[in-house]
Length: 98
Length: 263
Image (cartoon, rainbow over all chains, first blue to last red; front, side):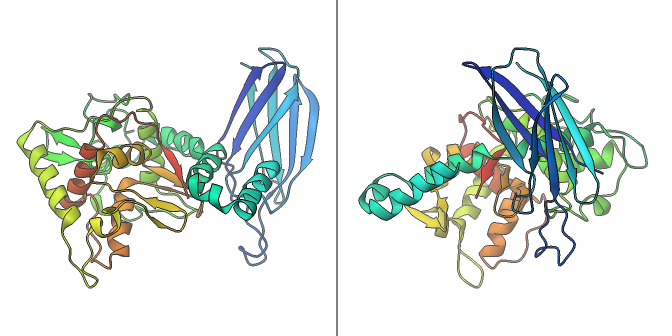
């Protein structure tokens, strides 16, 4: 079962800064002796519209922190971040821009 | 992030004199804090705090950490302290064990089976420490110091801090007694000096980026004893609580900023 996620989205000077924490072992091929377990796809949606589709790999550390900046945005905009890992596990979190 | 890493490397290569003046520890510390997942442990701890467990199928929500049953705000910052109901000085972890036994009806043996977890399986104590300590953010650290047993605990902790023993004849002060010492990328602050103890104690317990684990104060003391080649201290014993009491009292007055993030 996927562990908790936490996200903060704040508006500052015409940009929305988003910081999201993801609980995940992010086990590499080498560490896990051939049983890697890592997040492969990361999707960011703003008000239901996909704005980022990212592919990440084993090089990202355990309990990953992903932060990015979106141009524009308004207070109350709904941001959704979801991930899908190589074993098919998935999780998502939502937050309103503050 | 990449830009910053380049800037750092450039400073080290081209300007050694500059690097000497400005502590690289501070930069390193700032960068680890920026990417800290410590809040995830707080979330996990909150879930455990509210989860009914044990033969009595009770949660810990009525646990009295010194501010009244269930009161978490500022509770960590006022520990260790004397608890009337058991007539004993307790730190956070000792009190949690007490609550798990009394409220949830669990056995001490079962509770202490897995105290210090791994990256794959963090322990209950680690999650709970993160959550409870997080509820003291911004609160000034004020451990108990008026009850005779609190004073006794402080004195014992102080004596232990300077007591040299074991096969290497080490004391805590062997590493934490001289200014300007370090182990790899970690400063070794003089913990008997309030000026050095405050910023450190105010950021424990903490997440360690080097092994992706959340570490509690009881773990910190346990592992210092291991590094000193001493027999393993008993979890939440009067000895470990006394050391905790000595450190917290030395750091008293500091604003709690944890749970922190360490190398």
